[in-house]
Length: 138
Image (tube, rainbow, N blue to C red):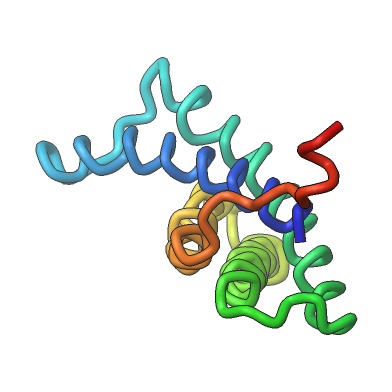
């Protein structure tokens, strides 16, 4: 459960960076400019967030199978990570599987931007994970 929580926080922070970069540009100009900060604010968070989403999917599925995730928060985080990975796989298959140019991969950050909305609901529901009382005493 801690692994799911940790990778969900990291992938959510990557998504927040992308939203902070994209939303003002979409509101004011209607287009996301591929300028000097595009790599730092869109590409790098995608390269960090997607592996975290894969790790979150694996950790969440393991928790669900072992029935350690008996609460809504863990189930929501798992669902959000699964949606993120499924959207990313669909975008990659679409870009590489059909007669396309490969420029479709520029849509890859949207998988994080959409899937992590469910993860944030799970994180809000979960709050901060608590340490066991015995671990705090030492």
